Amino acid sequence: MSLSTAGHLIVPASDLQSFSAHLKSSNRILALLGAGLSASSGLPTFRGAGGLWRNHDAMTLATPEAFNANPGLVWQFYSYRRHMALRASPNKAHFALVELARRKPGFLTLSQNVDGLSPRAGHPDAQLHLLHGSLFDVKCTSFYCQYMQKDNFEDPIVPALAIPNGSIQPEPAVSDKTGRAASESIYQAMRHTASNGAAPDISDAAVQLSSVNPKDLPHCPKCKEGLLRPGVVWFGEGLPEKVIDSVEDWISESKQIDLILVIGTSARVYPAAGYIDKAREKGARVAIINTDRADGADKLADGDWFFEGDAGVVVPQILREVIGNI
Image: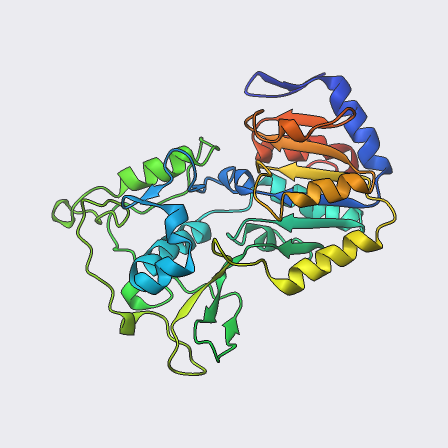
């Protein structure tokens, strides 16, 4: 029988059977996770359609230069993302990967996502590396201060960043799993004025926001001077050195890597995308799980697999022979 969802054929049964057989015999496994996994939990991906926030491309807000120029605007954007991530829940793919980690000690997950859903699903810390940091870590921007706080789940992190309360609250998307409808519908849901009983949409450029005074933004409790910033990796910054060293050690210590799972990512952003090549050099076969066949299909070789569909549906099913039902 073929793997399907909502009646749509996803993958031939022969591919599923060959993958399951290889998975069962695999001991050294990598997984590379991307925004498509978060989209399956109803979160915006901030890419493609719906990737604009108050007429700002989300990419342009994720830079040190943007923070230096307008820390209030950048913090508003990240406060919105923190709020949305806290309202989302890990999906079945997250839990399937947790179970695979428990059953396969040689399984290591590399996540490009910053939403905290993998840790909240219970993924073992020793088998999970967050390549791009976390929305819920904060660190001081002062050059001489090394302060960093992990797992700050305050929402809002300071009162000045509170999303206005009203009859409509931003919620993760329920049916659409691409991330696009999540971005667009959430913006539209908040597009009301306070005069008609709902909260103004902070993501709508037509709504005037009060500028956030830097003194009201999160400040470092250690040095008392520096602004705190989200503990994520911005464009133009290097990945966390300790994380990269740990991953490189895992790869170099592996005489063979049997399999790499590429889930919800186009695998075009380096250095993360380079792990596919490094795994293949160690003998790994590649399995890509994505809603768009154009994302990553060029990285496939003979004997690899492409499973097209929602990661929250596909991942638990292709791992079922090892992890059981989720």
